[in-house]
Amino acid sequence: MSRLVHRNLKRSYPLAVSGAGLELRAGDQRSYLDACGGAAVSCLGHGHPHVIAAMERQLRSVDYVHTSFFSTEAAERLADHLVARAPKGITHVSLVSGGSEAMETALKLARQAAVERGEAGREIVISRRQSYHGNTLGALSVSGNVNRRQLYAPLLFPARFIGPCFAFRYAEPGESLEAYGARAAAELEAAILEAGPDSVLAFVAETVVGATSGAVAAAPGYFRRAREICDRHGVLLILDEVMCGMGRTGTLHACEQEGIAPDLMTIAKGLGAGAAPIGAVLVGARVHDAIAGGSGIYQHGFTYMGHPLAAAAALAVQEVIEREDLIANVTRRGAELAALLDERIGSHRHVGDIRGRGLFIGIEFVADRQTMAPFAPAMKVNRLVQDAAMAEGLMVYAMSGTIDGVSGDHVMLAPPFTIDGAAVEAIVERLTRAVAAAMTPELARSA
Ligand code: PLP
Image (tube, rainbow, N blue to C red; front, top):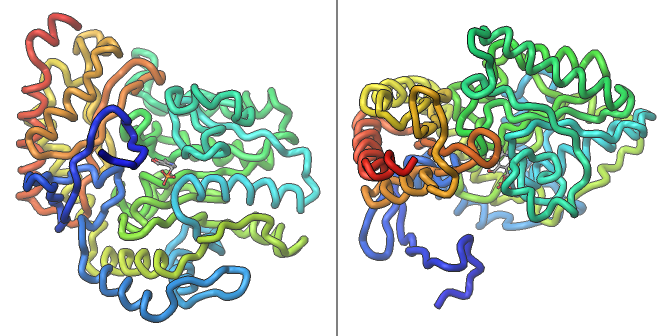
């Protein structure tokens, strides 16, 4: 009997015993294609030798130091690497241990910078419905993920929420994408004006929404407008690229494709590719300089921040991505994957939308393709597809509540940046069989 508090306390989990590239092997000798990198994490697949070697070297030199005593070469080199490739205006980096810590840190940096600038009245954070920014209480407070918030609502701080920018579900019939993007962005300005511009600290958004709605990119122009609105009112723009960043969508940072740069940006999953727990906040000059030119004391910290082992792992991951030009492969294989999915399941009666960017793909299921009506939530269709995929030896990331936190089902694909054409074919073949197995005629009848 397991003594671990598992995610589902009523089921048992197979042991993963080895991983190599795209494949994970379980204790029962079954093997799985990890087509979702767990949760869009393993961007180099499993067990990359360059990363293992860098981690071994790091452990033999310095295993750990507390950041109040020392810095390390590993952390300094990673920070240099990240800043050299960061969006315009980013000058510094804070290294933490994951996405939620990165979001907590970004919120606290935003607040400290405002106070140090003499704007202590800025305390309201605006976020979006259908978003996820982490499970720690601060990050969850600004998350618009209904399911994950519900139980903890009394413990959360009161953020304000505007609608998502999710054209497939929320654009009006006949409305152009540009017009919809402008309408969605106008909600931000209305929320700032309603709160009182001097009281708004930051606007938080995932550049491409991840698990909550399934790889949803904003309509064209949305983020440019959001950037302008933030600037007009002195509000910081915090982009969450924990899931969609570090090459996943075909550019190192997803915001490059939006033509904007944030004041603060969080990254995590693909940063260390799962070899070590790591996240980071990319910090813009405006935020950094307010603190450096004020108290000079960063009023925040974690025991494991700037961890040298995690930093060495992340730097090695980023070196491989750059040396092997893997982001170009993301674009190339992402286009192949999307085209093949479209060909094999795009017209399936229960596939409503195949979307995403690069190797970040969401497939939304519907009960009825004419009306795009979702399945009843109790049918747990996303789980049926995920279970059928596991039976086919394929890992996909499944989620419900795609549309509004309650209705809608999707699965996501986020395979490693290293995949080749044969792997694309294998993933689509298995998923096609899984969709056919899960979407039985009985399911259609009971929808
Ligand atoms: N932000 C986004 C967009 C995420 O997808 C996640 C995790 O899925 C987080 C933040 C939280 O990251 P972590 O689970 O590493 O704490």
